Image 1: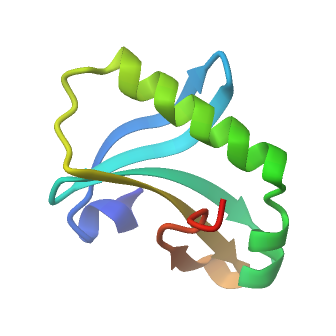
Image 2: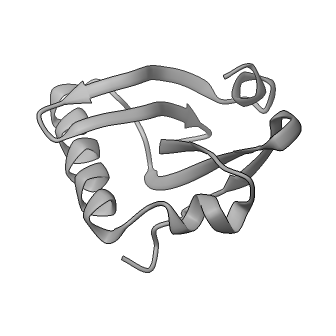
Image 3: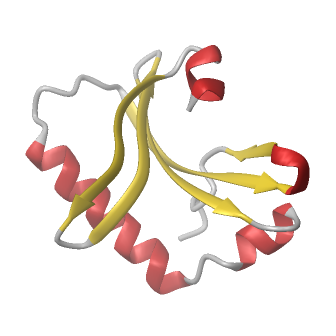
Length: 101
C-alpha cells in the first residue's frame, strides 16, 4: 500500500468485506475509484490467469455493494485493477484489468 500512496492514491479500504466477498484494496486518485485485486504469482500472466470469470463477477458485485454502502465517496470514474506481486516483491500494475468482462 505504500507503493499506492507514493503514486498519489488515497487508500479508502483494505480487505473490505461484503456479502459478495472481499476486495483487497479500494483506492482513490484524481477522481478515479479503483477496486484492486492483489495476486502474488510467478508472472503477470499467471496472475491474470488466476482470476476466473466467476471471480470477476464476485468482485464487480462487491464493488457495487461498497459503493452503495459508502455514498460519501466522490469519484468521476471507477475501474477494477489487478496488482501482481512477482518474485522479489516486484509489483506489476494492470489498470482496468477486467474491461473485457
